[in-house]
Length: 114
Length: 109
Image 1 (cartoon, rainbow over the protein chains, first blue to last red):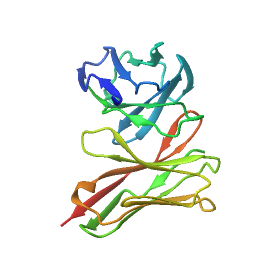
Image 2: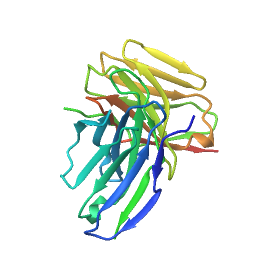
Image 3: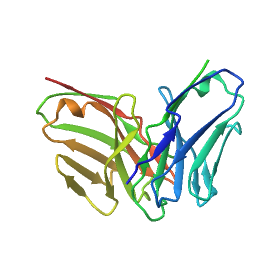
């Protein structure tokens, strides 16, 4: 059974640009969550999607957005990049926290904004 | 508020036991998790415990839960150099995981 796949693994962007990250969850999982990890702030929740609907959103500016497709794959987009957006972006796949107990993470996408 | 706390560092000798502690705030959390992160990698789910349990053992890992004190611990028996990593505890919030700051475990020979 394939794990959670995030692409790309590494990305370098310039301030002001926009970026799209992709996450393919484990087959059969309908929930995808996104987290930002930085040395200063730790792991911060961005948003969670379940069956194409955003159910929860963290405290991030509107420049951070996401969506989920009918096959449960999810993308997150960051527009007008700032230096502080440099981070490891992790996505987690689960059956949905209301039922399934386990959330599995991908390897992450390391975004560097220069 | 939502806040999960962990000590930042732990250093142990190879072969000894490691105990990583965590305190959480949401008494309604149904599940509590331990994740491991190695350098440059994502988060690996190690184990989890349901809130109505006091203890869970899985090979070298033992999780203890004290609901009264909202205290969670992870004990690693016979710690190996390959156990060197950052360990995160997490509780379930509303459709999300709330993570602790992570404890960096260093194992020395």
